[in-house]
Length: 308
Image (cartoon, rainbow, N blue to C red; front, side):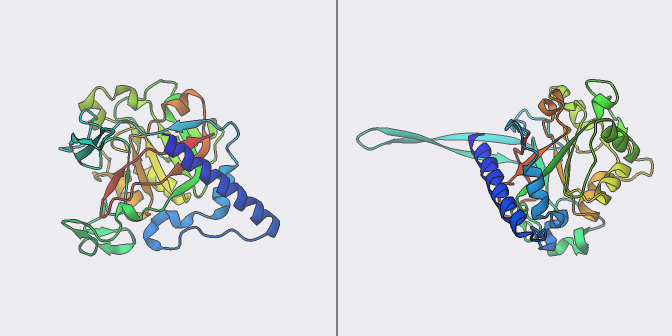
């Protein structure tokens, strides 16, 4: 946690310094990432980062990740196992140490879905065929190690509060009109470059593992398309699915994943702990994430940070 706070502080200081220099020189905003494989993150600019850094007024830091472990509810047969290795005793001062070995799927707990996770009929974002990115020993393109650092404005839309409940009902489905109405009621305008987090209170039911994984409320394909059209770079929620588990009326499978990742290159964040943000009524903040750079991975376990 101290490492994440330090990273966020350094990012804020760098952004503030750069903002002062740019303001004095009157330079135009610069695109942060030009590689098309970065997906929607190519829409981020230095100005967006400076503006997001300016949202920090209190210095309060929110940890948005949950614990990943053997009991964390996960999709399908995903599993987690940790082994601690005794390194023994060394030297005249009898230094002792421990090492670790973890065997896990990288889609357990709070996670980011990379652009190699979902395609449509074997075709991934930007029309890239599956056989050009996938190898049995890891992705050779769109691996999560290539996800750029994200430092931008974060927005939390509290769908539970909008519906007047602490936790949304199982299989609740929110379309574009629902998201827009909730955002307006909470005084938030969704903008290009945003990371949008949907709060449903669903993490309050994480101890009900089967229900938590299979019956989640969340946005549907209509809302996903509208969010992507606003130019957002990532969409997250406090559920394991990242979208409503309600059946799609047109029979589409994983409509939010297919729309955001495969069509628009927008990253999905799952099982994001938005409870503290919701309790404090925080709807916009500085969002910071450096995804772990594990070569060839489809997704990554993460612990993003919100700063207000």
